[in-house]
Structures are given as structure tokens and as C-alpha cells.
Image (tube, rainbow, N blue to C red; front, side, top):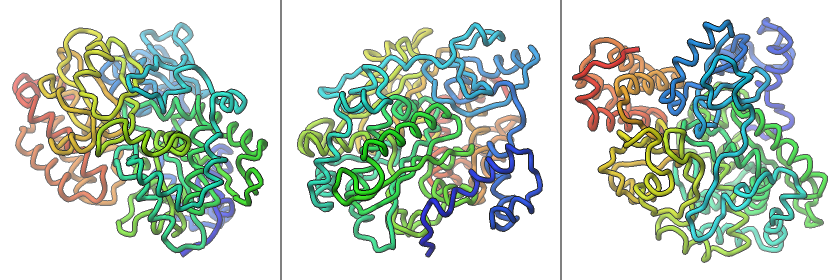
Length: 540
């Protein structure tokens, strides 16, 4: 078991990127000598992460599902024909205004309908944000504007829960989170308090708190908005968690496609340190806790917590065998809590208002609220905070206003690892257990509208391409199964062999990526199979 502190490890791959790739160094052996790492490890890592071997581009067109449904392929061809060096990116977190393009300087152009990017909105304002819940928690501040500055954040009530937590015993904080019933908002929905309790009770020389900001599900953009416009709330939630489990180091892992979120979070950390809210002897309590930002390097599977930890340790972002779970043996072999950004934003509210007030929101087994993201295919895209248990039909028809271009074929819920729901299934409550009973997944809470007349075969190919390109490659069913299923879908393959392959991937893959991505694909084949295989459709 390693006991190296995070700052000594120095995020090897980030150093590699800064000291080598950006300086034009290509000699892996020389980089390995400078970084005191095996050359084979660096070579394998640089081949794994897309950002470490991306070529020079003028623009990168988003090919996430939301953008794919709103013309990303045609846009890519048009921009290339106009003379721009075009790359691809999977999701830039602006699904409410698709299609989107990531510019070379890190800014984002949205609603792109022309090859003249100077005529498109760049760094667009925050999306339309509203609340259907009796109480606004996640959207309480971002609906009113930018709260990234510490003065604005503190005026709005951020950093008032941490002093309360510092007056309580760590076990009391854990008990409060357990009693609240909060479950992780990143997709897995594991009880937050139970994870914290396990980390607090597990032996180790130190403990870590990690905020997972690797939001990569097309249709989800709440984490991006929170990290950009409410970063202090994320940091306060992390600090309370650190107090509860006895951690002294926090890491915010932010995907490469969110450069503005990285900058905003770094600035918030500096402000919090200057105010004595991070660092040594916080508020004179004797409690030490500091936070750093770790930028992702281009890998969807690093949204899975063990793959994320592998990346932070300087290796390929491949999933780990479990058990042991990260709460027992995580970063550098130490107990580690990995929670989603939205999960951490709930924490200060629970500490300040009490677990009972939180638990009355939502349902008995799915307490609290959830931010639901609505993509550009809806009449009213944006973010709506609902109480868990609100029917999907209510969200689609009343909050989203239905489809932008007419009655929808379906709604994709929760991204590539979520569910495909036709209109006659929209009666389902958006709640973890209620959906699980029907074999459905809420995931991160992003909704993507499938417009009328969609080419379902092209959508199937799009999803299989994503799975094939983003598989970490560690297990055979996911690695080879996705390749073969894509080949069948691109060729003259029939429905039955593709279904068999997807079933094997679902049942035999190592991690949630390989186990869950086939599920919506199987749902797609079940509900829309005749439209995929009977009428032909696009094959590439």
C-alpha cells in the first residue's frame, strides 16, 4: 500500500502532458526518465487517453447523442469543407443548445448552423433553470445567476454549513447523511451516508475525498453548470465530507472537455484558501483539508470511480476488480469517498436544514430532489429540479413542453447507460427503485428527445460506435463484443445476432460500462426493431 501524498505523486500524466506533449517532446524514454516512471507505463497511458495524442485542430465538433440528433455529422462535413481542421469530441455539456463546437481556445460555440463560427453564440449564458420541487436545493443559486465568486456565494448562504459541521463529531455528520437517505446523483444511486461510514471506519494512513466531475453522459450538463457557477457549494460539501471521514486531501476530477469549469474551480479553491475555509486549521478548528483540481484527459469510462482513481494515480483509466471498494481501498490504497458533484452540493443543505427536512422531499426510498437536464430536442430545453418520484410524463409534457419539432418517438433517459422510453412508458416515476423494478435506469438524469422521423438504425450505429471507441479494453465481452456488434449494424447483420452479442456483454462484462450500455440498446431493438431492420435506414 502506497502512502504517498497526492502532491508528491504530482499527477504524473498531467505533468507528462504539460512538460512533454505541449513542449513537443515525443521521446517516451526521456519523459519516463524525467518523471521517474517506467517507459512502458507512460507509453500505455498516452495511447489510452484521447487528449494526450489529439492532433492539431481548429475546432472539435461535438458528436454526443444530443448533437448527433441535431445534425453533428452534416455540420462536421460542412466545417471541414470550409477549410477548418475538424476533430471530434463526445460531449461538451451544452446539450440544451445543440449542435455545439469546442473551439481551439476552449470556448464553446452553440446552436451552430453555419460554417461561419463568428456568427454563432460563443460561451453562451447558463441554460434556462427552473424548479418544480417544493424546495430548491441544487438550483437554489444557479437559477439566480453566477455565484462563482466567494463574496457572492457567501451572501447567498454558501460556507455557512461548514462551521456547523465543525461543531459536531464526525460520526454525527455521517449519521445525519445516512438518515437523510441521500443517494449518489452520478447514476449508481448508492446511499451516500453508507459510503461515508464505510470510509470512516476503514483503516488507512490517510483518507481522500474525490468529486467526480467527469460528466460525460450526452444530455447531462448540471455538473458543468454547478462547477462553473456554484463551485463553492461543491467545495463546502467536500469539506464536510472530509470532516466526517477524517480526510485531509480532496480532488476535483473535471473532464478535459470542460476547461471553463476547471478554471472556475481552481479560482474558487484559491479564494477559499485565502478566506481560511480550506487549508490548515480551518476556522481555528484544528481541521486540515485542502483541494486540488485534476483535469481529465479524454476517456468516458473514467466516469466510473475506480477507473477515475487509476487515472489520478497515473495509469490507464481501466476499471478495478471489486471488492475491495474505493471506500475501503481507493486512491493509493487508502479509504476514499468518490461522490458526484451534484451529490456534494446537497450535503451543506442537509447539514444546515436537517436530515428530516431532506427526507420529506421525494419518495421513501428516493429522497430529495434531482436536477433533470433537457436537451435541445425539447420545446423548453434547460434544467429543471424535481422531487424524485415526479412522473417522466409530467417532466416531458409540462416542464419540457414536448418535442421541439412535434410528437416525440421516444426519450433517452440517463445517457448511454440509461433507458429508452417510448411515449406509452412515460408514466414511470423518476425514482431509483420504481424505475429499477421495471428494468429502467435514471442515471445522471439527462433527457434527450428523439424527434419524429428519427433514423433508428443510424442511432443504433451511433451508440455502438461510442461503445466501441470508449471501451477501456480490459474485458473481452465489452472490447470484442462492441466491435462485432458495430460491424453487424454497419453491414447486413440481422437483429438476432446483435441481440445475442449485447446480452453477452450485459451479463459478462467487468464494469458498469459494459454491463449497462447494452441495456438501452436492447430496449431500442425491442421497441423499434422493425424500424431498424425492416426499412433499411442509414448504415454509417
